[in-house]
Image (cartoon, rainbow, N blue to C red):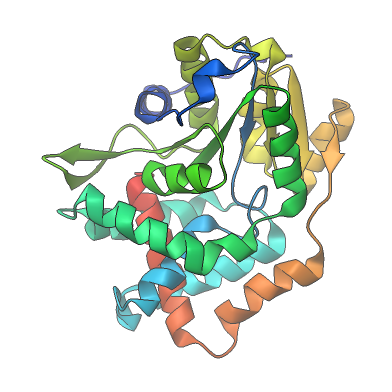
Length: 289
């Protein structure tokens, strides 16, 4: 099942950093099947919309950003939730803003904000169908990991609150408990996700041919191709075509009415939401950076 993709050093470093930073929840060591695991993308797979945008909404409501700094990012949330695709150019444009946000801020500050904002802004965006798939793996004694470009701190909070094993996310450089404003490698996206899964499998003694992976995006084909049991969840057109061609299971859990419920606040009424949306995206890129 696994296919080989050319990997740039920055992607490999990002993947290795993500695996090294991944924390294992208590109790997972006793898994009846220590060699199998399931890997889930987050945005539009386990959660409607982009987790970092939802985080941004929480930051905006806590007055972390000014309108002039990030209002332009609000449009990207609308495009993301309506199309279900990730625009790499949009992602790259947020890097500097993200880095400037986290620089000199403490890890504890981000963790405290993440815990609070997950409950207030994200919990109601979770997709029950995908959570059901994750629970099936847990019930079989398999470990379940999130794999996302979102900052590893936020990804770990989501995994912990959902009772999952842990999370692989973008790692930002930290010195003395504070962010330096630089990433470790590249954002955990595309090929970097596959490298993170590969590194974690080696660390945890997993057999990739016995593992599963789920995503909505064609950007994650390298990760999906790495495991023995890939599946598409709410897939974008390219992933849908690839899944059909390769006879991968396809799951549809997201209705358009649900997508619009996420998109409308970014366009109607709340300028503050647009501000928050951009800020969160920037922060996500920062920790992903």
